[in-house]
Image (tube, rainbow, N blue to C red; front, side, top):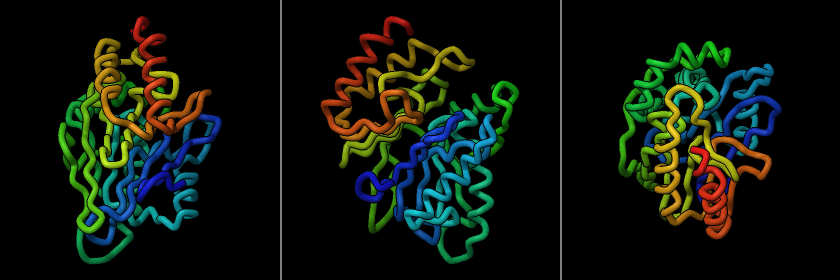
Length: 248
């Protein structure tokens, strides 16, 4: 589903666990011009074929997996990044001039260190693996993408759900991708290794100060997924601060 400009949203609607994925089209140089945020599971705990579902949804929008040049992970939990390597391998099949020879993977350096330390535990608990090596690390600041259709994504380090969780903010159209930091009427878990309630509150407080038109979370809740409109976003932050901050 195209949300605004060249941003497509793929909301997970299956029964089992998987994340929402977001795609910026035609922003990289070379023959792999698309940027994917959080590809999710390959197959989840209910044996749902999450990656196939994502690729089918992208195909309906005329987007091919082989054209992905960069995969951004908001954090390293398997339900957000298990499909990294499968997409990298698909990207190798596309030949052409310009750009890298395959899709690149990136996340925050603190998250990469956390994954190396807790990856085996997470795989055992969740019954899956998400082994990959990032090609470079994200840090606080502006990530400049593209040339003709240039966009600026601000990378915000927003720990609390995990040590290196990031959020991505596009100021020109008020888009905020939050990963598992904040949802529609809920927040990310802190009761797993690497979780920290104090840091999560600080991260949510920071995000609430931004000028947001579209809040795009990593998972849906019973309230919904995407929050559209500045007033609804403001109300969501107010609800979370009132109902969740005392518990964190």
